[in-house]
Length: 196
Image (cartoon, rainbow, N blue to C red; front, side, top):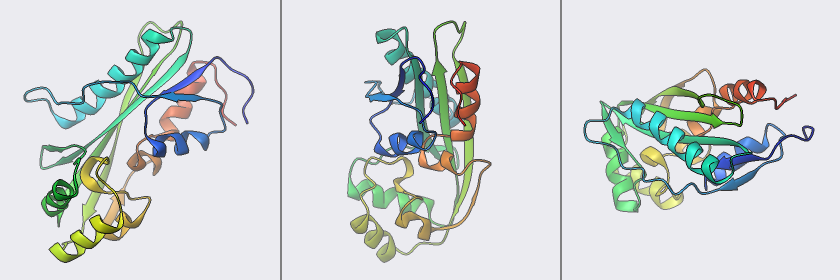
């Protein structure tokens, strides 16, 4: 594990983000930020990802002002339409039908708030994912096999969802899972947390 550092908090209830952050070998706590994830009228998908990542980090930082707080949020974008977390299997099926044969952009916002920073560190990483042409039967089998009701765009590329895609283009493979570790390592270094 990395050496001692100020309290580090992941502003997320996502088990996948916690698992990713553990890869960096830093001690951290996690808490749900309680932020409304509804898009603003006319808000572009990339702006929503950026706004939500910042809102989550700032919400938790307001409760623990001496902590370093990481906020992240992912938005799926198919032809400019935002695909959020489906919330139900029926909606997940609809989302996957909508993505069949399409190129989908998964925008992952990342924000770090820390004492001494005038403004939060903020970026958005985008993964370009091209889906195969998917039949209704295989979509239903996938949704029955893997719970994607709380996943943006109804796909878990780290699981069986990888079978639904033709290609994934990204400078950081962790971005598609929901926490861009390469950008995060740079941000943590800027606030004094060394990651070997």
